[in-house]
Length: 308
Image (cartoon, rainbow, N blue to C red; front, top):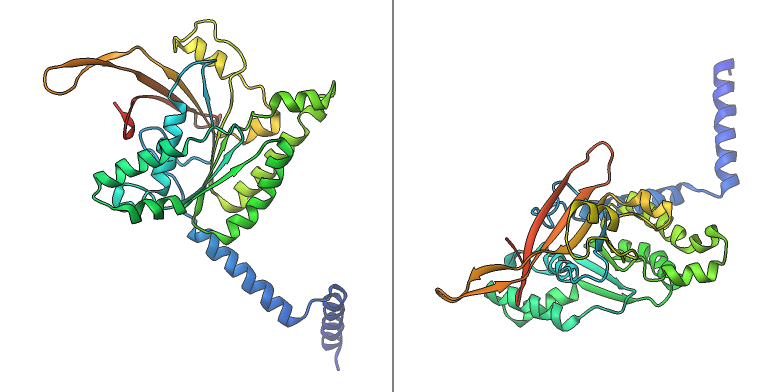
């Protein structure tokens, strides 16, 4: 045996010893490769929600923070129901036919209103009750009453994402529900006040990186705008001032602010005119490289949101 064959033989024995040290066999390697291929298949099956609402979002969205003006009826809830319906409705009714997870921390989800919107849109498409049941089966609802429960729910989310490749939207209403409770429990320490939300943000950041799904998270406005209900640019900037922890702020890719506008006249039933309440939604990108924003007006009808 020459010197080259001797070196090759020594290298093979060294590599075999490394494998045996870690307890990895050829069969285990095949299992790991198979599990990896399964993971890739699940990721490819997950649908990107780049077209969830072209009248609001100009490009693919990942984590969107929703807010409204202080103590203002802004149409934010109706707009969230509209996007939720867009996800779970079948393609025949103008939906995306994907699963959605609604994490209700405010205990404000109105299922009767949501079912009413779904039923109206399915009826317009000529679909029957079976389509309504199928749409509701794509919606998962979880209630959380503390930031600890929210953190545990997000830990379990990875298992849900693996078992349901069609899950494409996570909606948290709201991410700031336990802001004051966490401040009281944290005492004078800022790090303790923000500890649980920071852990939630870190976990969501990893899940976003690994699974590429979309997150909508509402956030309460805790400061009163100086201009009241007027949706001027100064009041928008004041209401959009961030107060949650920095790890969360770094995750946000888009910010949406909903506000109420002046009522306008419109024709209803022939020549009869009546006033209808109009709302506005201001969507802006948080990226420093691709700064973009747009304002879209809409009104609320029995069938849900209608863009003007």
